[in-house]
Image (cartoon, rainbow, N blue to C red; front, side):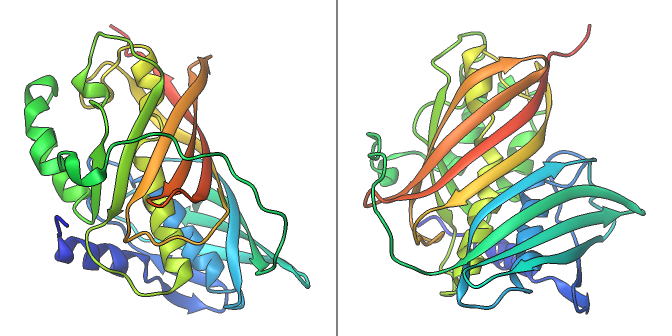
Length: 294
């Protein structure tokens, strides 16, 4: 494994929120590639806040979230949790993230007591072995000349140092001007081992899920993305369903596609499989996708 243990420790510290009241938590941000809080970070922190108010025998099974305002990476984020429901099988929480007196993010999450039930799943798609694919450190420098600012390479490597993320095919910035099938695959795992806490693995998968899900929209139009300067975008909403147990420190295949883009918005949907083929997570996200004005 290509490990950046220091970066992973920093990310775990980022997710270890400070509890300032019974249902109020405070988090900080890490340096991001763009001058706003990374959406995956605020989503993961909000899920941590929700999970800390739920009995340990109930695992997260779904989340639905809206990104309301850009986050300020230099200011703390306060997470307020509402205990919406504590049922016999399900527990529901609502979390509002606030900065400078305004909500920047809203999340609803549901947790379920483990139980047996009917079983079926979509098959895992074909994909090459992750060990045969280039690491980010091997791949990103190849495309430095495509970026408006070549220093983006170093900033991306730092921002994603806690995650070993490997593209199956060229990313959007690797095929600018050549529209492709609106589908993208990446393998990912954390750059180091994690504890056995199931909530931690769910939160880290949530963190990574916002990194590449809009790629397939860009591929359909031959666009390279914000670093190339041919689109302006941001996450609008995000939903995840956690179907089966998984470990975020073991390889996960993120199979992503876009069924539609219109009205300045694009939809990405994905399935995340474990290396042995189990369907672990389903993800849907809508993003703002605009072409820059001359």
